[in-house]
Image: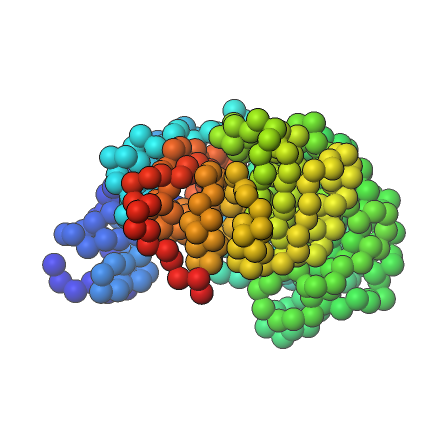
Length: 468
């Protein structure tokens, strides 16, 4: 085959989906990644990037559809970066997420694929995988002289305006449209990231799934604007079930959405949400899973795997506002929640009081320092790890291994870093179960819960990880 160049047209059949949600086909052994491609799709692909070991192309003409391709209900699915898999049948989404998880754990974690086929259960999906998000983050741009909110197109900062996103509930979409209309009526300037000018950057909207409440956040470059008071008055009157309007100031250039300071413009700074028999107060910057229905499934899965009898000491590391710890507290003797963000701990203490839970204690600081100290002082029966996408620092894993914690439940939103950390933990722990849970239908993202129990195969000569 001659050397490929950008702009070449190739005949490609998509063989499988890969991490990141793209389709992969091969032309004379040369891998070609195709955004939007599904297994079995066959067509003409125009190369947009050619590298030594792989290329990327766009399918400009599809001659044959793969067997799991469906017509996406959203007309923006090909241009908007919010969903990657609306055109993939939902049962096939779950099957592919399981296959991708197994492939990632095998390739990056060096875990045996034969064992993984037994360990990794079928993902727990949704009966109705639409309108599930309880939080929306919408960037704004000026398009043809009008303020528009929406999502960025894939791998770009080109805004795709939306009016009715099918993974957000109708009231949230309506609130977004009302904010957009008010901004245009009051001629409030939208932030321009190229010139670092303008006022409004993002709009964040939270909607409770169990109470008729909406919380709207305005992310702005400055605190003040001549029309801000009029905007607050207008939105407070026009958005149904609005309980609070808050403002977050982010004066820094770059991609970060929220700044460090938040103030209340009208009403309350939080809304109410319930999961099972627990009640939560959620502020604008609080971390709270975006799919309330599946969060109950997630927490019940953790509870089932934990098998608590009431006598155990549990550590909830990377606790955020302590939602997992609160869920387990009634089945445990004592729960310690470790978290670095003061605001999250403040929310957690409010939620602890709301639910009248007395056997849960928050400790503030980074987990890689707090966890070794706690495990040196206290015999923990169970440690819950729920780290951010980057996974756990080596010191966290070292402290578990050194302290011989008998049971660990690892909750991951990133299969790649989960694979890295399991590769180390599996030298000292037995993997008892791997349960994927689909918190993010129509995207390639996946939540995974892993139960690890202290194994005896190689405790005689343990290989501890570095502590820094």
